[in-house]
Image (cartoon, rainbow, N blue to C red; front, side, top):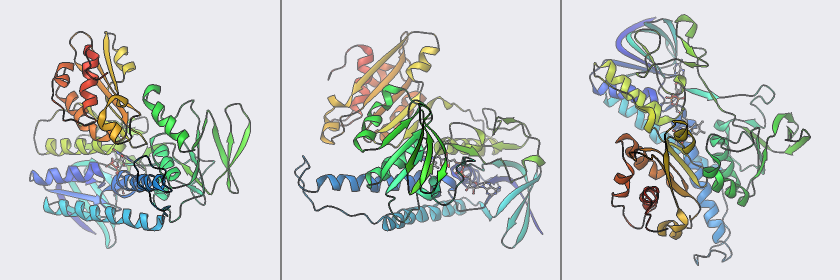
Length: 463
Ligand code: FAD
């Protein structure tokens, strides 16, 4: 048995863990990171990056399909395209593997030692790692738990055979003819819409009365419209009950039994933090439900132990994990850091895309004071028209008394790229006048942001 010591030990090399280790290494902290799988975690290997690659390929395929037979209003005509999903997946795997090497290289460059294997706590300062060559014991002054999350499995729809999670959906070699998606949240709809664009007949089964229920109905309306255009059948208030042969068994909203023929059943009913298998019982951490309880500096209830990323609570997003990782590294290096989660944007890569940052109109109203809302539709935005992306809008929510911006939302083609501007506005404590007075380049969809602020001030120029 080998034994090493370090100042900081990070468990898990997902976006939270690897960013934490890189920043700590840059600051001269003697750092070790342990990873059982590949560098980059869920996000890089089976989450953000591969899903966006697949979504992009599906979009391209759909675009070209629309040009076949001279039907495109753009005047472009092509022969009917074909899709080789095996090749698409190989292209996606190439991107993932380049980024895997990139993360490994960045860790090395920062002087971080990487240990490959599964880590288990022995006590609050010691971890044992099962490596290929035996057990490696690591003692550390500070430990960061960044073990991430895994798909939730339904007991009556266990993964295996036709029942798959997002991980398997990202590695299919053939486009399914019929796909049932259980769960109409962001992962289910992102993937469901991508497969619909590739020619799959998709049915979404959602127990709640709306898809994307965490967003308000005004924001999700363009997505619901697009689902219908793509021919995706959405069963609301319906409960998946099990699988029989090649069919998903469902109880419909009116209590009837239905069978949905499907060659694949994609279960996307949420993700659960990974809190088992690494010796949580060996250390005495307070929990907040299924997550590890943390304070604003990601400290757990045990001195010297931090938790970051999906294992530490919502929102389970890669950029939150990264921001926490960077902060914790600086704290361990002796810096003073503060944490303000108000400006964490969230993007849903459906078609059209959704972006939210800060408070929704309902959340802002719940604060009690008067608010102003400005909404600018992309139907009045020249750039959106040239991209055939007129469906959607930017909405700005601000305090009525001092015009402090409390929240910004957008739905529309490519609006994910506006998330940086939204986050910056909130981070810098922008007032409506700051956004309205910023000269935005023309023609861009960003002008919609400026116009929404102008609208809230009562003098939008283009509507
Ligand atoms: P993870 O990325 O889950 O990494 C944890 C790592 O720890 C894993 O590599 C695991 O192998 C390792 N590990 C766990 N336990 C041990 C142990 N005991 N010993 C050694 N290693 C261990 N988020 C976004 O922000 N944008 C998106 O567009 C987006 N799209 C997504 C699409 C899909 C299909 C999915 C599934 C997720 C998506 N997410 C997205 C969520 C995002 O992937 C997660 O929020 C993010 O990966 C969390 O990072 P993390 O560092 O907390 O954990």
